[in-house]
Length: 280
Image (cartoon, rainbow, N blue to C red; front, side, top):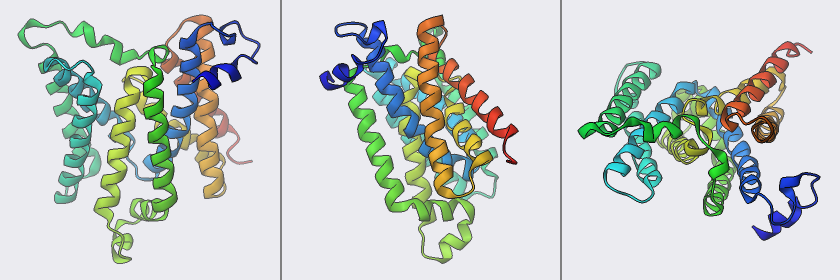
């Protein structure tokens, strides 16, 4: 982290100077890690038509936080990660074994997760207000130790993309064809769902439950408006959230609004801009 702080000291900002506002420096590094992470996952979320799946995962993560708090864990986030992974595995299993459409299965799991989370968090007259921070998020509260965890997850996702992208894409576009070519579609979908579960759960505390789904939809949706091939699609999907993340963080620092909401609005503006110029 000292190397990162030293590099930032070259920036012409008061918070970037040595010994000043470490929370801003940590938040900027978090944005530079989370941006590419969501950008990569967004490409597959849009192709797989699973945009509401991440929203349902956020609800399951909230339930996991409530379970962790109820059990007295010092860090209920890890209980939320475990619960979200179980949620993703059950979702894939049920979707595989039923004739129901994916959005129907997502709706069933999402409603159950929300109801269970509210039930546990308000049981015995407990106040729900202690979980309000999860709805909005606070990226300025990110800790250096969690930055290392996020960096490892980003590395794991990049390796997954390098090793399995073709199989993942074929499974998303045409599952029957992928199955006929020997691709284990169920396990490909399971690994992808678990990756989303971990990323959404760990990022929820900083980005906010109310807007985290937009980070998995808007980057790739905007990239599809301009990209002519898969390389451009991934490049634009990576650059969009990084630029929006930095701009949103600076807006939050200067004007005081939620960083997650600011990032989302910049991504929405990026999508609108790409939509206007999509035919060029």
